[in-house]
Amino acid sequence: ESLEKGGFEHFMMKEIFEQPRSVRDCMRGRIFPLEGKVELGGIKQYTDKLKNAERIIIIACGTSWHAGLTGEYLIEEYGRIKVEVEYASEFRYRNPIITDKDIVMAVSQSGETADTLAAIEIAKERGATILGICNVVGASIPRVTDAGVYTHAGPEIGVASTKAFTAQVTVLTLIALYIAQHKGTLTPAKLINMLTELDTIPDKIQLLLQDNDLIEGIATKIKDAPNCLFLGRGFGFPVALEGALKLKEISYIHAEGYPAAEMKHGPIALIDEQMPVIFIATKNSSYEKVISNIQEVKARKGIVIAIVTQGDVKVKNMADYCIEIPDADEAFLPLLATIPLQLLSYHIAVKRGCNVDQPRNLAKSVTVE
Ligand code: AGP
Image (cartoon, rainbow, N blue to C red; front, side, top):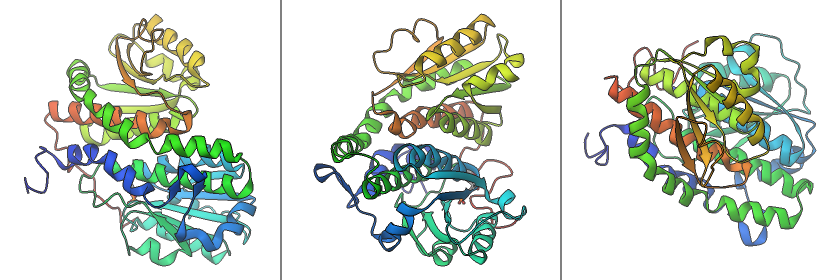
């Protein structure tokens, strides 16, 4: 088993460190930056249907649902198609309005999640085109969908999803840019720019893995907190949700992910000197607004841990701890900002003596209702 862990103490750590390669594998043969082109052979025959769709519904559970939420932000921004993201477990039981004009995308690492499979069946009965985004080749979901895109992250053993999540986000990024390319919602020049930058993301992930020791140090400081809040806006919001899920899954600390601006509508009541608040505070369109949210937390003596863009000074002066990530187009923020949060959860869980690869009460794939 230690051989399988590639020298790491846990599968989760191995899988976190595999992400430069898994994200690269996911893009291999699919992006052509110099030509500003994305090719997705698996869904090629549905290109017209996809670009003309009035609505895309993404169905998933857990971490895959968080990837789906990044898909909503990406596809709406770049492909200009209305997207709804649904929990498969809710969708399947609420008589959803679906027509043959809809495209349903099912996102699943395992391809075996019972609720996602049941939701696919309902969408199918109502005539929708079903596309799958799946990691396990030949699993049930790819077998029942009309077409799809594999994430190619390789086997994920740790129960807490890490590299499968970033691969799902990568595929959804590719789909958003693929739609933009075919619909003309992005200019060829902008597509070239974005794909050129996307091509550098695996190297940037590699760079930020070097912060592992720094993040372990921060974990030592907050490992005994009973609660944690994760806040982000825009592309940082799904990252906050995923950060919170990761922490609660493996460390058993109660954690909530929230849109930063929603803090004042409730969670602000929880903030005191015991409460670590993890902010996604990178330089993007919501930077200034997140700064005012940080000030609100500091005014109540909360402990601020901020994920910031390399070279940031403003947030550094306010936060208790900062983790820098390389600068990038905000569309790629989820692919970068997620990594330090995975490491933070990992170290907190290890320091609390938890079984990070097999957390209590959780199964790798939930094949029952
Ligand atoms: C991820 O860390 C979780 N263990 C869980 O939320 C998971 O993402 C969910 O059960 C969905 O699984 P799937 O991607 O295999 O469908």
